[in-house]
Amino acid sequence: MRVFGNLMNRIAEHTTGTPEVGMGATACAYTDRYAGTITRIISPTRIEWQEDHAERTDKNGMSESQTYEYKADPNGRKVIFSKRKNGVWREMGAEKGSGLGLSLGERRKYHDFSF
Image 1: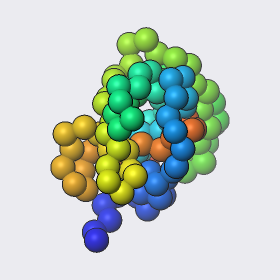
Image 2: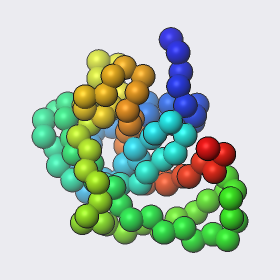
Image 3: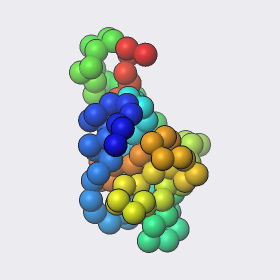
Image 4: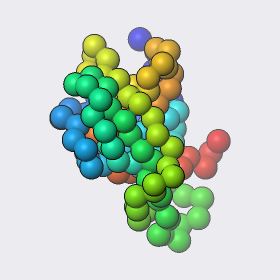
């Protein structure tokens, strides 16, 4: 099995739990993470996630040590995620090993400055 992107993102995608409307969730890209909220349960294996507004609160510059404050963003991008056979939530329509993964239960923004 080939692993793409940041190892911490791939591990975070393997969270367990049942999604609920209003629950915080983090969309994991190649190395970045985007904080958001589950806005709709479409079916037991499909959910809608909407990106929140994340404002950086630390003064660490281009650092890995980052803190954010989160607010709902009614204009944030929306993504439909599906639960795969292995239990991982992936962006609908994404090919295996690509697209966003979803970590349930926590909002966590991260910007990787090395790219």
